[in-house]
Image (cartoon, rainbow, N blue to C red; front, side, top):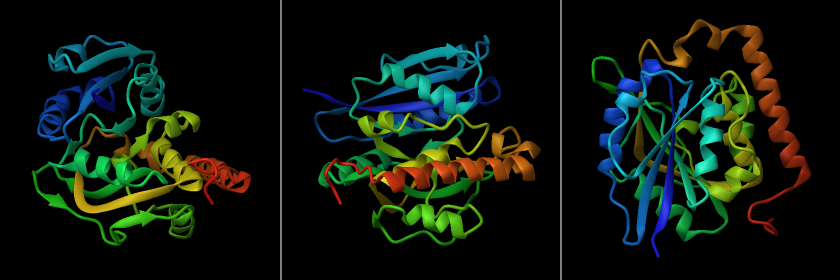
Length: 254
């Protein structure tokens, strides 16, 4: 029986033209025998500008819905992910590197106590060059609350990147998907995952994170002091509450 990895992508009209390069990076992925991917593309809105940019491939499902931000779009896409064992996030303007899916899959298939995986990221700059990040952790398991504690003590900056998340679908659904926030919704998910389960970090580059003028994190509202403080407060409150309840994945783990 074929087993499936679901790729979830939120897209809006300004980023739709990047879908072709995201698709090219997905087509380059090689998976072990018996595995396949299916790409769920969810438009954050109902324009007529995205559909023409969606590649023609039977392995792709395209849906639209009322605008609510990328976290809402990704979460509603999960309605079509019931046949997948794992979910990989891929933003419309980003690109996977060769082997990224296989490395994530191998880490979680090898250890049932690991609920999610992340990997090293390079910024993809407008001129085509790339830039790395200092402070990546060592390759290997990430223990519960390690990301949360680092984030809280480093001005709300995590040592791993939520745009690279690869997650067990049942765990993702149990946590409610991405947080209902105007931004940082993927960080909220990352910290909720870290509060409830062990993770994995791959030191090999798994994602090219495109930097461009239209991305949400480049907008002035993203760094508004009051809003940022509110986002960080609710993200931390959720993560700390999950940790205090001592709910663990898998159930019965310590």
